[in-house]
Image: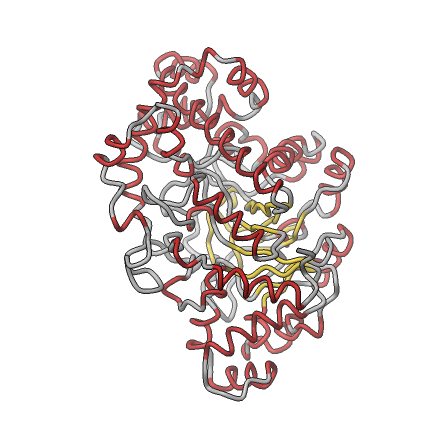
Length: 513
């Protein structure tokens, strides 16, 4: 990467009407804002369809797109929906419009209501599907052909899930749960229209996303897409490819993912994702991963892989356990996977998320792949981990890395300032040469420290540029019910803010605009 900078903002956090950020005009305006601000990158979170808990890291498919991101305004423009229908659905309220005046900075008046989206937005998409006539177009037939590796399984998976009232895969009848071909054929015949609906949704998602990505490229903005290392146990990926995962003799999940107990969590973290059978992946030349990365290359300019250390070693927890205490480390594929990807694609721009418990072997894997890794400034002042924290101080960086003030999993810098220990705050002030007690000055100095570092890439969450507190936090790991909800107010993207970002980018040599 050349020396550059970008902004982290999930698609769902974009402003606009109808309850959630999507591929509407506001997305194009945000791209314009980035271009005016001297940015090169827009980093987003995973774009897959979300289920219980609304986490983009627990998706029904690693290949599919989130139907909530389809622009209702675009469907109105196509004549598939009307303004009145969208208004009657209850989505076009002040809370959903997310305009200035809808609340104080933070959450007030701007949270996403996922229950409302499910009950109101999905029926609107079904109406659009019924009026679309898409099946008769050559473009749609080409789409089906180009996505035949994953789309039939995903569309049937979702249709069967709907027929079971949204129940997870574990609660289906044994034959269809296990993917019996005769059962799949019978369900496909029974649910052909529902399957068609899910095919159409993916067609429209991809059509709109490609248009937005093309526009971003024309403005000099590149997209950093985020993918989880693992897939959900309740996903079409696991359902259709059980043989690629660690199963017992009865074809049930044997081991699941997580991380061990540490100073932050006495029980560790139990994520519950099925773990890959890496020997099986290696036996077929990592075909599934090659197809997955091929899809990512279609969607993004740069790929950030979450929990990269799992390719070196992964923490395997017995599936029946209720915490991570009994897990053990097992070896991952190492460089073999990335050698296979390089042989297929040549060089693929990848950022390695190597945060957390990092060993010498993880560091070696990152070096051997040549991928830039991540540095998070908030981690640099943690008194509980003084040895590990030091590597996040800017004077320790190498050029080939990406620096962040924080990520979607962290507190905002403003909120973090209020939560750290007094001795940690004093260290922050000493390091940044802050002489006052003004927290906003610390926020600004943290941003400047990231920009001024030697890291090739600097990415700042939008909340930090706005100086927002933890009411604007995206995610608090290991919790549910309050995450993935924060949205930007459209009137916060001011000319003054764009000018401030541009000055920083120019001052520290991260923009040629």
